[in-house]
Amino acid sequence: MKILFITPLYEPAWKAGGGVLSFLSTLCRALARQGISVTVYTTNASGADEPLDVQPDRPVDLGGVKVFYFRSTFGPKNLFYSSGLIKKLRHTARDFDVVYIAAWFMWTGIRAAAVCHRMNVPIIAGIHGGFSEHSRRKSYFKKKLFRELFIRRALMRAAAIRVTCEKERTDAGSWLEGLTPLILPTAVDPEKYYALPENRETFRKKHRIPNDAPVLISVARPDWMKRIDLLIGAIAKTDNWYLIFAGAHDSGKGPEWKRYAEKLGVADRIIWTGFLHGDELNSALSSSDLFALVSESENFCMVVVEAMLCGLPVMVSKDMGVREFIKDQPFTFTAERTADSVYESIRKFEEQRSGICGDTAIIRQFAARTFSPESIARHFVSELEKLIPSNTAGNILC
Image 1: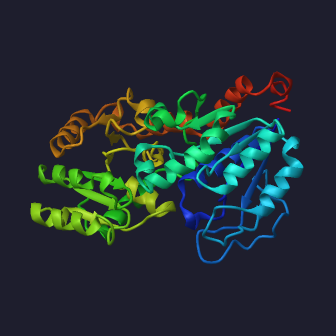
Image 2 (image 1 turned 45 degrees about the vertical axis):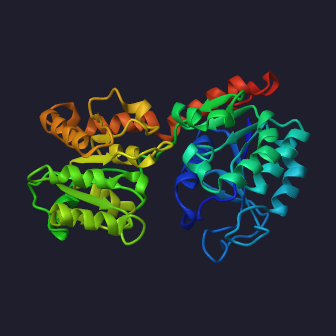
Image 3 (image 1 turned 90 degrees about the vertical axis):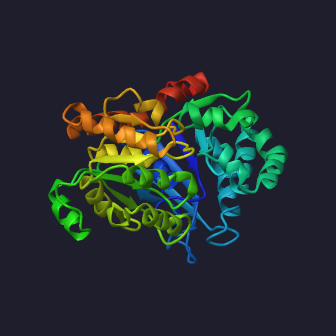
C-alpha cells in the first residue's frame, strides 16, 4: 500500500513544537521499516522566522520516508496554505491508496481533503487534539464558524477520524458525531528515552538534592491546567520529598507557582530546571523516583510514556488520555486533583516501592511494548485493512 501524509510541519521543524511533529515522523519511519511506501507532503515552515533550508518540490529520504517540502504561501510561521503542495496533490493523489491529513483548522488540510474527495481517494483525518473542549475554547467563535463552513463537510467523507484515545473521541463531543473513529495511541521512540542511572549522582549534586531524598518529577508547560500547584502542596505535606519541575518557569504560571512554594515553606525543595530535552531530560527522569502530572485535562500526554521508558512509575489524574492504556498496571497511581490526593498517592508509592512498581525494567518493557513505533504502526496498518476498499486492502504489505 502507498500512504501519503499531508501536514503543514514535519521534521526538522522541531522549533514549532514537538507533539504532532514527533508522532508523525516516528509513525512514518516505523511504517517505512515495515516495508510500506510512505510519502509526506509538507511545507518549508520551521516554526521560526526563517524557513527550513530545503529544496521545494524535491524528494528527500528521511528514514525511508519520501518527503516533499513546498513553500508556505503565507510565510514560514503562518501555516495556513501551500499552493505548491495542493498543485502537487492534484497531479498525484491517485498514486496513493490512502491519504492521512493533519491540520484541519488550516487551508492546506481543507483543500487537500477536497482534492482527495474529488478523486475518490480515501482519507484519514488526524485531528491531534484540535477538537477537544479545551482547544475549542481558544478562538471559539472563529473555530465554530470554520467548522460549520468547511470542516464538517470535509470530515463527513473521511474513511475515519484518528484519535489518540477514547477520551479524545468523547471530549470532541458533537464535533465527531456520526463519524468513524480510529483509535491510534501516540508512538514514542524507546531509542530516544532511556534510563541514565550513571548520571543520577551528578544531576542531584548539581541541583543540591540529597542522594537519599525521594524525588517527584513533572515535565510540562507553565500552564494552569498542569496543576503543578497541587504537586507543590503535596510536597509540603511530606518531610523529605523534593519536586523537580522540568519546563519553562519564568512565564505563564511559573512565577505564581514559585510564590506558592515560598508561602508553603518548601521553596528549597522545589527544583526549577527549565526546559530539558534529550539526555538532559533522561538524566532528570533517571534522578527521580516517581513521575507525576495531574492535569485538568490532557489529550494523550506523551511525557507519561517517556517517563515510563526511563523506568519511572507514574502518577496521573483521571482526565488524561494515556491513563486508559496504563491504569491497570501496578506502577500507575491515579490521583484526584487535590493536594491531599496527590499526597496519598505518594504514600501508596512508598508502601509499594519494593514491589513491581519499583522494577524499572518491567516498566520500560511495558511502555516499549505498548507504545513503540512498531507496535503503533502495526495497529495502524491493521485498522487500515478494515477501512480501505477491498481492492487495495490486499496490497498493504506490498
